[in-house]
Image (cartoon, rainbow, N blue to C red; front, side, top):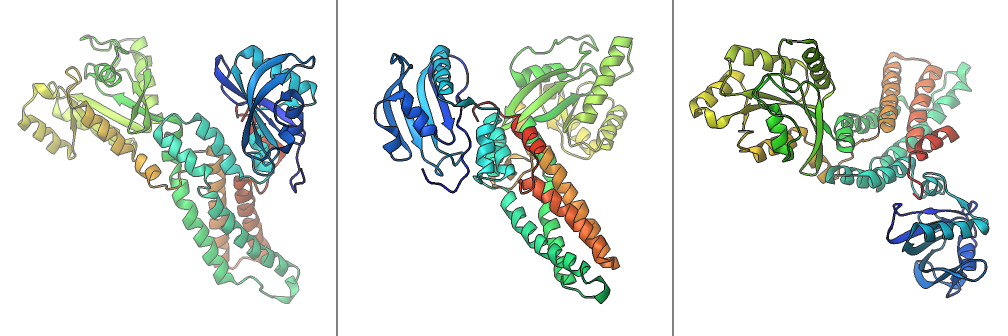
Length: 462
């Protein structure tokens, strides 16, 4: 078929998850993909069928024996995921059948695809930019409503199209600034400085919300590390078991029972929380407990959210105030949770909230009361779902974050230099750095090593 795309040698791979199932799909893409599949297929002549049509028939060995009854879907270039000629062979999900089909394809000159090679070809053929390509892997790996929405937003363009447009405007200005270097002795100014300054400020205004969203986006993608801390016997393990609805942690009246970190996951409002039960914070009585307490403190430093749980029945106000002040001083988002609500009066509850100066989520972990209120408070404290629900761009990828901050830093230097009257060569240097970061972010500037690093993390068949 005539096309203005560069079609690479045909590749094939299993596009569905490995293992025995009702059906499996083998994808073939590249120059001659339809012709190669047609040579194995007995049914309609696939080379004369319209794009996006499915055809029933059999796939044959070279001796004419039947491998399987299949359904072959034809996608003609450029109207396919890779923008190449593509066939998708739906067969029965037998590992033996799949291997026989791949063997026959290789006999016809098709090679096995590398991890992520289909998506890499889609990127190289201009189907989408690099940010969108990476979103394909994120979409496949999404395991919550929030991560699914974030990946889908990126796949649809997210912030990359806006950045590409701004980058092009910046390129135009850089060309003018560099033109000035050719007339260095004539003191000419082709790039209007006020307009350049405004453009840089406009780009930074776009960058800042994206940069700020990374902590939220990282939590969306990888789960929110939520550490439960408090004194021994505050009910941390009981709370973990109640939230998970299973006996995950050992519960005992003996202080210091939990000596190591216990982790599990809980989904709340489409957000994945990585709940971490820890050793109680107190003066250790032995070396093993001391190690557990040190791990607790490390988990607090690494956490995205801290739940400070205290025993409302047996609490000393000064000690509680000191502990809460330490949690606040950590700078981490936190929730104060009072346990054993059933054992205190309303007056005691109001007194404790007044002393702490902020609301407390009151529960009874042992009786599993008000746990839904706690879950709602956790969801509200993270504040991720609203950003994803409204379609706001959220940065979930560390590579994107690094290039966004690199762009912002370069533009900040350029604005400062512009205001202080630096020479065009110094100004151009910072602008080039900003352009490099933006280009690598969206894939307008790539290297083989960069593409290898990104696409090698994809699954084979995608």
